[in-house]
Image 1 (cartoon, helix red, strand yellow):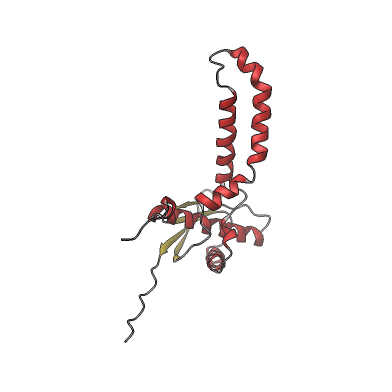
Image 2 (spheres, helix red, strand yellow):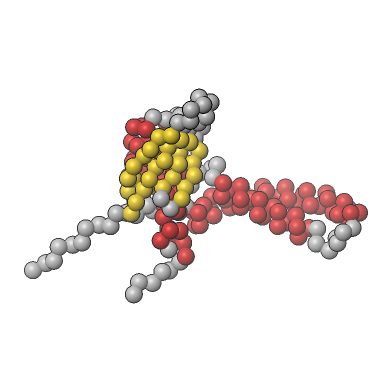
Length: 185
């Protein structure tokens, strides 16, 4: 019986984390190649979306390069400075500090108003101090820099009829199990 060491290593959760890491790695490489262009993404257990102006062939090449580089040890490609994890981490910490600072004020608006400068100072300090925490949460929880046996199965391009809508690509992934070792005589 195999033992799961962490809920983060469980089937669908692991796939989402690895796809999220590959999404980030792809966007990091796209941003290096096209510094003036804007790219965004979203991951799930079956792959990820890339939103932005890029040809399907070039996206296929860059996402495959990202996968190869991660498998070669460049696990840091899985971290992205503009990941929503950073915003959520900051928001949870700042919101918690704000809530704690207003405890025991009941429905007394004067007490709340009196604490407002402290709340602003505490929230601002929390936002500043939380900046390095978002990438750590990405690395430990929301992404994986080790894609393992993840492969890119297919990339499908979606263009809206209206010309001012962004181009989207669906990058579908799968886990491919290595072939079993042949028996030795």
